[in-house]
Every structure is written in structure tokens, then in C-alpha cells.
Image (tube, rainbow, N blue to C red):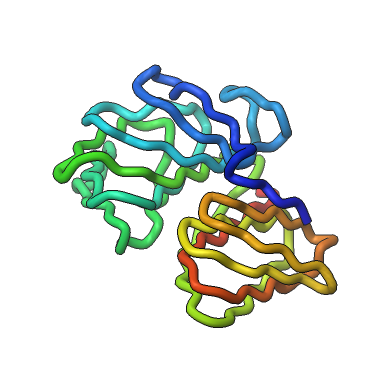
Length: 191
């Protein structure tokens, strides 16, 4: 079990130079944008424009803050992604652009290398207690807002907004959460 505190997240420019991203986790550690197997990041988007293209990558977006982002994804109908929307999965190697109908947003971006690994993202509102099962690969909990106590086996960790908890198969198969928070559960496994 590894805690990834918000204060330790790495800030870096977007691949297309249009903004800044906060890298929460990446594998392998220290990989660049062309070499990662998977990556979890958050970005503040303040203007309309195209997304960076990542060949061979699948991505899932969720809105953390703001009123929403309208996405224009090649081959699909336009979609308005809001804080109330389920996480949206799409290929990162096709043309995608976005408009901000109601101002700046912050999003959660999960990416994985197609053919090597695959990911899934689920949003959870915690108000009291909740148990989440995980079995294979990597399991990451990102605390978007509020505060959580996370326990697996005998280990217990407190998470605040912006913190993440990275678990592997050796950490058990269940995570018990308590508190009041919005969090995202990200599972990553070999393809």
C-alpha cells in the first residue's frame, strides 16, 4: 500500500503546451509521456481547444470541479461531461476537442497503453462506510473531495482531497472506506 499525497504530485505542462497537468501516479515510475503503461492525472482546463493525441492509448475522463466540458470525439455525437456524469472512456489517439460552456473545469484523466494494460474507473460517494473489492493488478483510490479513512487488512490510512492510495494484489482483496467523500476507484490490469 502506497500513499500518494496531493502535495507530492508532480506538475508538468500538457503534451500540446496548452495547460498544466498534475501527475498523480504513473507506471513505470519516472516514465515519460511516450513510455508509460498507465497514468493518472488531473488538469485544470481554462480554454476551448484540441486534446493532445496519445498513439495507442485509451483514456477515461471525469469532471472534478466546474460546470462541465463539451467533448467532440471523432466518430461520436458531442457529449457534455459534468460532475454528475459517469466517467467517459474513449481512445486518446483520435481527434478530440472540447469547449467549456460555463468556464474553467478540473478533470481526472486515466490513461492506459492499449494491448499492454486496461483500466476501469468508477465514481463512489462515501457517506459513512463502504467496502470495495479488488482482485487483480493495481487498484488506486483517488479522494476528489472530503476525507476518507481507508483500511485493508491491518493497515489504515487517512486520505484528504487530492490524495491517492495505490494498492497491489499483495495488499489483499478488499478496501474498507469510511468518511464523507467523493472518490474514484481505478483498477488497472494486464491486457
